Image (tube, rainbow, N blue to C red; front, side):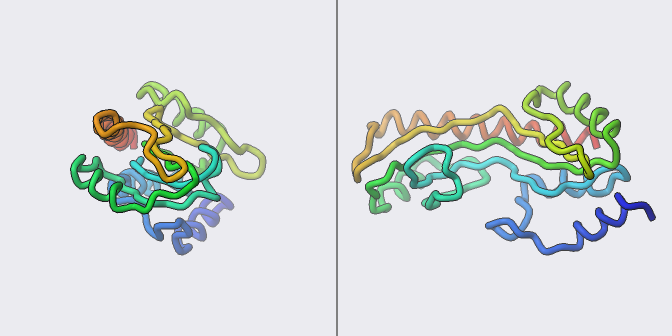
Amino acid sequence: MDIFDEEKRVFLAKKDKSKKGSIDSGILNLVSLINSQQDYYSTSSCSGRIVLIEREEAKEKDKAKWLFSSHDPVNKSLFLKKLYEINLPEKTVWLRQEPLILHIRCRTLQSAFNLLNDVRKLGLKRSGVIAANKRVTIEIIGTERMDVPIAENRKFLIDENYLLYLIEKANAKLLLTKEKIKMLEKIF
């Protein structure tokens, strides 16, 4: 057994350290396919999601308070009900639709380039090598994304019609993400 095989065995035996504590059901099959390959294994993943978060700036993910999260398209009326039940904070509340993200460790730089070539043909252009010193890791990120402030200082910034429009768009983008996951499964 070489170093890559041993690192893969050790990594895949570890407990999931994500906030959720498990792989999203919508990407579990893809992660299993990746991990079954001789030259690859997944180190982290997200199947995409729709979230409401409270924070000052759109980029401070680690300082955000999660108000709602779904890895599946949301029912508009249930989403509105949930939103109206929230005691709006003074900080900004953001409606986000986040794309799929995968980090894949590769046996060699050549195996990374081979995979990236296939991935980019699917339209996943925001993909590349993010580490290539001791270990070669690639990152695959979908382009479907929304990040919209909807409330601030305990008040909504938009009306209900625009909010319904945003939810519809977020759902459509999340469905595109699910299609890309299925296309990635075909590669493996």
